[in-house]
Length: 254
Image (cartoon, rainbow, N blue to C red):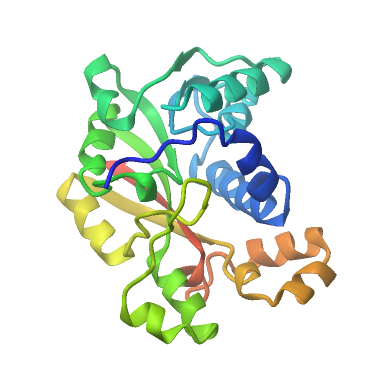
């Protein structure tokens, strides 16, 4: 298995994910969390690295708030799309790096905040990536980590009665245009790897804790603003947060 990048799939991602309720929910939860978990206003702009920045949504949000953002993305197409997004908002990034996550520590820079959203599940060795992320954080720095939740995928297949698929452990996505990740992550295993890498989890939210389980006709009937309101309300509830299709963790470096 190799790492998977998204060359020539930017428009596909924009249409399938970011243009609809799924992307709106994700962005709402992530930005709410960042707003709260960054706590008090920083005395200075934070030095931020957005790893696997995709189309640049979070980079743009942080840059608009005055932080010094470096955008990193292995796909040339996606990196250019992020560059255009930040430029159109009038908040260009400090730098743009076309590089894989594993190659970033060699650049010798450390950051107050590292963003790594929906990246690990596309890597051949997601657990090893945590040590790389640790090395990119200054002492006392923070990591915003969002990843595809294996538990939620199993639960979704149980609801659909796809028992043979579960028995065969056929959870990975297939095909070059499919958007189901190749490495859905077990949160307990990832927590163990994070601790071994010197990262301490401080906060957690679930992303899409109920929307992905709604029958399609109910999804179509639900108003997007109401869905987002309820997703935010239940994203940290102890019974529902672990059901999020993605989990968002806030980790700090020892």
